[in-house]
Image 1 (cartoon, one colour):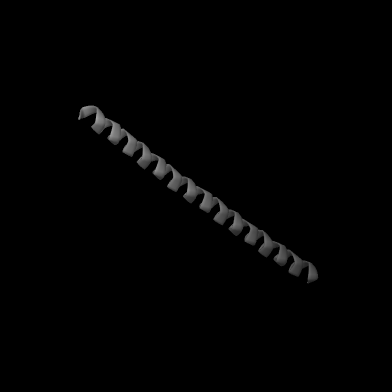
Image 2: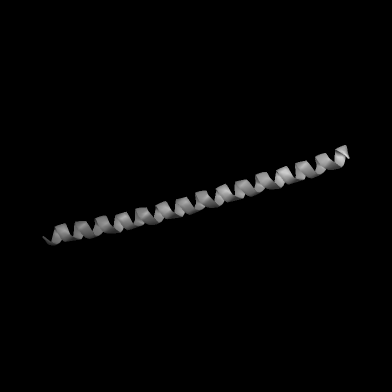
Length: 56
């Protein structure tokens, strides 16, 4: 009975660690997606700016 209780406790701890890791990776993924979007917008802005300077 004590061993079963200990294993259940270990399972809950492992699940908690997996949930934390999942949230951590999800946060990193979200952060990189936002960073990538910002870079794309920045490059489009620069490209459009130089394009308008060149053709004006």
